[in-house]
Image 1 (cartoon, helix red, strand yellow):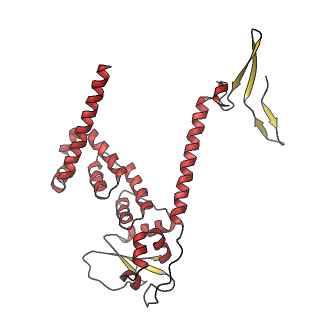
Image 2 (spheres, rainbow, N blue to C red; image 1 turned 30 degrees about the vertical axis):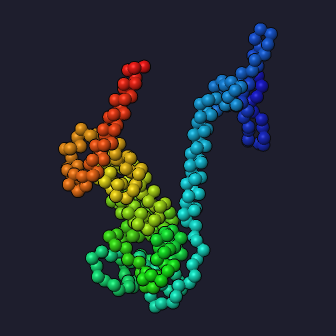
Length: 284
């Protein structure tokens, strides 16, 4: 037997694959054993057994996904070169580059700028907004009202949602729950913060269940969230027998019958595919 352990330094060791030389009828045959699991492997398996190789491959894929995720975060958090300084004004849009995002009702007729003392206003730096959102960039790099006043009015968003939104723009992190995720996704879509939209959509997809599938399906349709749409549709089709009994279904029929037609089209398409598969199996 050869192989085993080489001493590198005091207290350290390095393991080689175990190799046994077996003599059979006048010829020698090498048997190699994986150092990870001690199972025998053949020469064609390139130094490790199949199970350990697959496990290592999965670990490598996970590392690649983590690296891609970190690259995505880095790309999102990178600041663009600062724009040319805005014209001086007496409002919050001063040379400091600080602006205020203010939650307002669409029916509000308040045109006044929001003072810094207003707790409903969320401060954010011009450079951050411009770097994260092409919509904010268009607002603030041109002589639009928001650029002149230093106040960006955000309709139909609570102060809590607005704070979470701005926090994500700075850190690429936020705490989601089932109430705030849909509102954040809507803001992310409106201001084209795609990184945040994907983040919210993944969270919502993980929370789809029999009780909320119809609402999630309708929401996903309105906001072009394909991953969420597919997850909700799959669950609805699996429970099609009880669909008509649900209150959410009756509301959907009244509010958007087009979506109900699409649900039944998807269901019938799936049934046809299943029937075709069964027919093929019978013939074989």
